[in-house]
Image 1: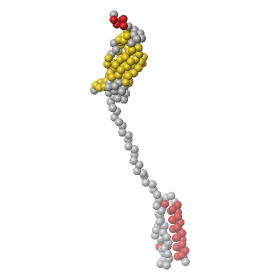
Image 2: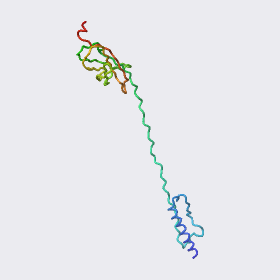
Image 3: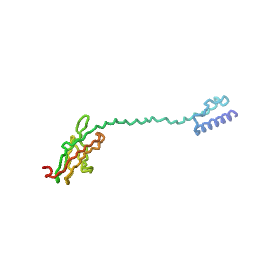
Image 4: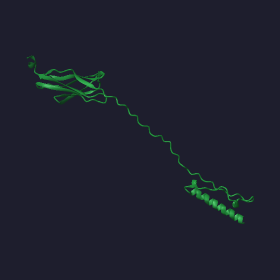
Length: 182
């Protein structure tokens, strides 16, 4: 009878350890003996007592998230220097005549035409219009000559991501037809 009481006590202890091991957050650190003590070994007539098996704890694995690749930076294209000039420089206009001019916009090294550039025109410092170059040339008219005297025309290209800025000025006369003949 003592042997049966001892076996039941061992069974209760093992069962309580097993239950405690399942509920404990540190179950992986608890040691459970799977070999019963000599006094608690079952005899040939007794059924063996169940042994506790530790419950494996779930350990998250680090994810293999690749680190972001650096964004490649583009090498900036060097800005080409430009030179602007009057292809047909205005020399004089008659009072009442429509004023206009041809301009040329070229890269300087290597020499080549600039297409699609907007060139602004200023008459005595006042904006009078613009032209867009095609194969390096643009043509613009900016009004009617109204008074006699010297006038300064400035053509200016502000530059962009491809081409550098440039400007040019020229002075011309507005005259009456009688002044020109004399």
